Length: 97
Length: 347
Image 1 (cartoon, rainbow over the protein chains, first blue to last red):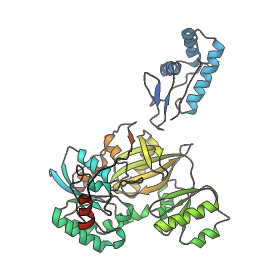
Image 2 (cartoon, rainbow over the protein chains, first blue to last red):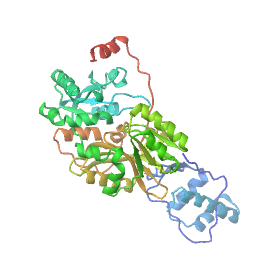
Image 3 (cartoon, helix red, strand yellow):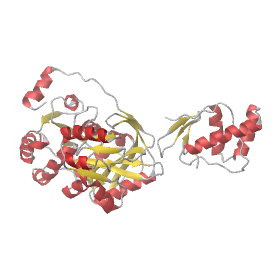
Image 4 (cartoon, one colour):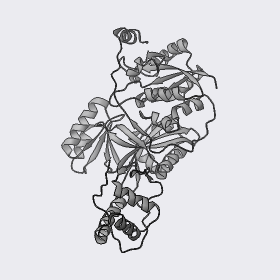
């Protein structure tokens, strides 16, 4: 079983693109993800769960970065970098389209 | 349909490479549409299903497949006289040839089966799988069928590694050098005889698909499962149902191309770029078949209904993310029980 952990918060993409969670990915309130196409499952911490919830609401990465900065009172550059890293992990695990 | 059917089931063994019989019976027992008296047919006295009296009502030993159809038929005639069998569900690769050969005779006796015919059965044989794939447009890894050891010696220079060494019925070993190939060849030769197959190694995710065909080209049920835990024999010890249209389409195409009648299992390697290679087609239910019932498509019960002439509509839905986890359990019995089956051939 693959485990995604984000120890810090998130990202920064200059692109104003929306990254979509694949429509058949199941996400629990606690941030447990199940990909029914591959059978892979993942668990994230509360920050990861928040990001995934926001992605499911079709928020763009910059919008998510703003929300995380507000939520955690964190440096935006740091947040953007971590978010980008997390998004690329989700992509690698076929969680994002 | 009649409320209590007499159904004989084989493959009651449950070693580390378990037979499907116990799982087939469990699924049949759970169907609310009919009751069943289950007759276990065994080859050995220590097949655990023999002693599971909550699942198996009565058991009989039958002759090994190598004894041929005459002795099998004679034994089945005896059992039929005792039990008035209505249906037999054989679940071992090695016995299917004999049961298929006897299909018409059994039918005359009033015993139904729901098996592929010999052409269907032999077309998916490991020895012909590559040609089968070419004919029907399926991706199948290239293979070479070896009928003697010296053929292997001649190939020493041209082999590319890893390569998969496979037995005629069972066993597969991934070999990374000629020495390993030779060792696997001799080991499998001692157990299963010739020929032996060398198959190109395909890297990917192991998926199995349990499929039930109606014999007219229609797939009644398709359940894809990803192996989550694999034993050193390559068997799934845990698995999860998947939702992947490519796999369902592959199975549907297989049934349409072959007009397959009965249960079967497609062993598929899904490559990282999404190509499904058919590695093997097992001509009977897999040992994990109970997962199909748990996921909402009871394949063994549907087979019973079709065998008894009842129309069964193709399933349209199953639960994705349903997991099976196999476990072992020390069943306790008494020497008297063992004596009955080993001495009298009945329990």
